[in-house]
Length: 506
Ligand code: FCB
Image 1 (cartoon, rainbow, N blue to C red):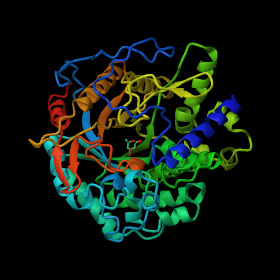
Image 2 (cartoon, rainbow, N blue to C red):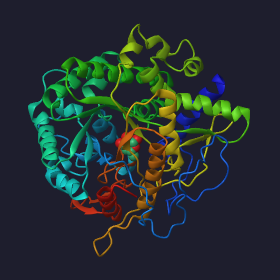
Image 3 (cartoon, rainbow, N blue to C red):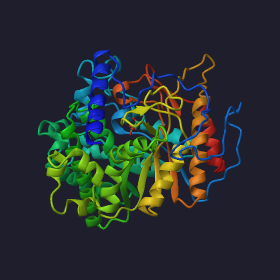
Image 4 (cartoon, protein in one colour):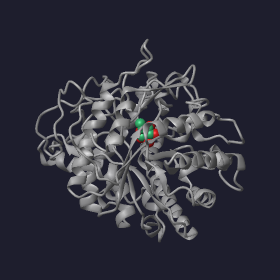
């Protein structure tokens, strides 16, 4: 098993090298071709792992907007999500330092078309209008991230007041409009100065992160009721280090899992920092969960899927909820791994500091063959790593509930890119997004009906934005951004979502 999975890790790295050589920055570990999503899921067939469970099927429905009569609990909260580097722009303003994503996107060949976040959706200047659009949609909650290099340009020391002021204005603007702020502390834009010292491979960076978190808790703790620590540590591990097609672009499998530990240590230290402030706000991690199903009924596929699940999910869930790393993953990495060597006494107690809520992000499942490779089973979106499988949402949510307890869950990301075009009449028609969101919301509804405590849902994303190595080609927003003019246009999905929120039903 160990041999197979290491081989698999190397295959991932090779695939990404091939992508880089062919000028396709790629995204994750998918094997698809990037075919566009035309309509909702229509896949059929049996599922050895039970992944084909029965979310009320919505197949070939001609009108994706037709209500299907599912009402959400009265206190359910509807939102949308973004992250700093993907929308803010203003890369050099008001004392902001450089982040690893500035460096990475400015390095030739790293992003599609050489795109950078220098301007992005210019949200730094247009946030007032964006806040108005959020109110127009009727959002209850807005999940955004804070740019560490705006707050501490070099990653340490006194806060940059102008950076803090931007987030103070943003939060005040949300509260004025009756929208609850949900702030992510780290959505991948590590200050470059800390990367120059070794970045997340250095244990010390976790302690720097806790200091940065403390600055924010003191500045905004009374206005921001929910804080999220680290966004998708796994994506940093896999894309930043395993394959290297995200910043910092350092393919090194051994470093990758040490980074996983330090990211989680940083999470735990931030939770402790919040507790030390005795602030009334809640805090938790943001994890992207991927159900891993065996691709066939063989015992070998079941074993391979189990280990794959270890790397995708349990490596991040177990330390937080169970104060331990999964034994199968540790064994697979071997006793000489940098992860094994990097765990100090007491670290797991820090990581397992009790959380108030778990932020779940769901995009795609994995189907794992007996040899540890993944196979494509469902239609993909424009993101070739994403297979459209709404039941995976149900499986991810119920799995947390079953195996890790009754922690409240907020869904902080779910969405897809569609081939959106601004029509001559000024509209943007994205029925594929409406169908996708409706089907995934039906799965959320079903999870709630079985007793999972899901309190809110955020679409990824509020706005079209800089999709990392994919640049601006993929459009993930409810709101279309016409980049040359920075004009915002509500897509059909945004109008639909406004009705969903108003009716609290799909
Ligand atoms: C998630 C990221 C988010 C965005 C979506 C499409 O993994 O957290 O920033 O890129 O994928």
